[in-house]
Amino acid sequence: QVQLVESGGGLVQAGGSLRLSCKAPRMILSTFSGTDVEWYRQAPGKQREMVATFSTDRVTNYADSVKGRFTISRNNGKRTTDLQMNSLKSEDTAVYYCHTRTPDYWGQGTQVTVSS
Image (cartoon, rainbow, N blue to C red):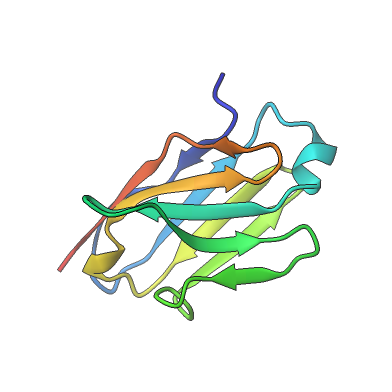
């Protein structure tokens, strides 16, 4: 069963913006509220890397490469996490995945392609 569902990927020109969304429709509220949520990405030929995290005590953390451009958010009541991506660069092209730490669930991934 799919536990995390991502949406919002697509093709955008460099300098543009995209907003990714991830929802956990089958996760009970207390479980979602009690886990850190994260976004990762994997570019062709590269390892999966952490992009942003949002902890249960509302602390956010970002990869250096996206600081100041990306913003992670979460809505526990809706069991969702979003990733707002601004000033996109060609090197942001990748498949983006959302992840919950506990339980260890991954979304199916959504493709983001930034054309230069």
